Amino acid sequence: MSTESVGAAGSVRRLQPGLTRRLVRRERHRSRSTAVVIALVVLIVAAAYVGTESVLALLGRPALLQSPTAVIGALNKPAVWSIPAVAALVVLGILALVAALAPGRRARHRLTDDRVAVVVDDDVIAGSLSRRVATAGSVSRSHARTTVSSRRATVNVTPNSGFVIERDAVSAAAREAMAELAPIPAVRTRVVVAESGVLA
Amino acid sequence: MTTPASVTTSIPGVVTITEKAMRRLFSAIAADELGVPAGDVSARVTDARGQLDVQLTGPIRLAPLGSARTTTVLGVAEAVRSRVARDGERLSGAGVQNVRVRVTGTHIQNERRVA
Image (tube, rainbow over all chains, first blue to last red; front, top):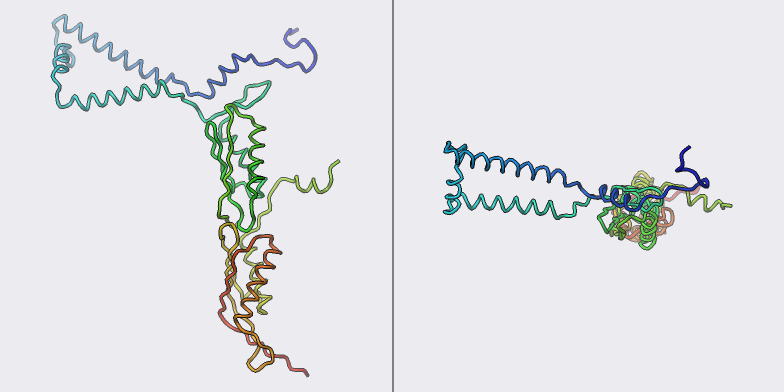
């Protein structure tokens, strides 16, 4: 007695656009949780240490490593080791910034589909393009190699010696294959026919 | 309704002509033109910017000295080059860019005596 499926046969539950967008985004981007966990653990340990040292100094007990007053004193008059130490901190800072601000995109694309959210690895798109180009150029699969990036796909195809590959035909085949897949974001195709062929 | 032609073209798969087949083909054509057994002529087929480069090595058949037929080594070799280029392209479908012939010996053909 489900109420969901009531209605004309063949009626399909559409995806909720917002949910789909979020799910696809999750699949297409790397999670930052590892970086966040590491950063927070470092922060907690550092805060705990500074707190412990401060309390020990207030109680007049001996410091674990360095008392806060000694550390502040050392910071005020730079020593030999302070330059590499600062450099290391700068590098760590830059890494943290990159981890935080870089898009963290994975080599994946969303395919256009009405009913389900489909996310495929770029290898799948590359394989599909290679196959279509190889068929269009009448060469074996191993003669077509494709690299797919976020917005661009390049198919390198090697002719069999003595047989000409028609550039326009294979380019059209590649464009057609890409149009059928309709990845999001859109990917432009380029077919490069090698000048020298190989004998099978 | 599908015509037989469209059925044929839609069959998945690919035809591959191996290098060995090409070698055999070119050496057979050359041997036929040279008038020597096919096994005596060796062929090497390499790629030349997408076309074929054929190198043939073998003996040549010449008429004996003093015979009425005048054939020169160079003349026969040239005939081989043009025939290999023409028939090779026709039979294999592959474009031939370059044919090189290296003559390594001669078969003197004694003219048959009429009984």
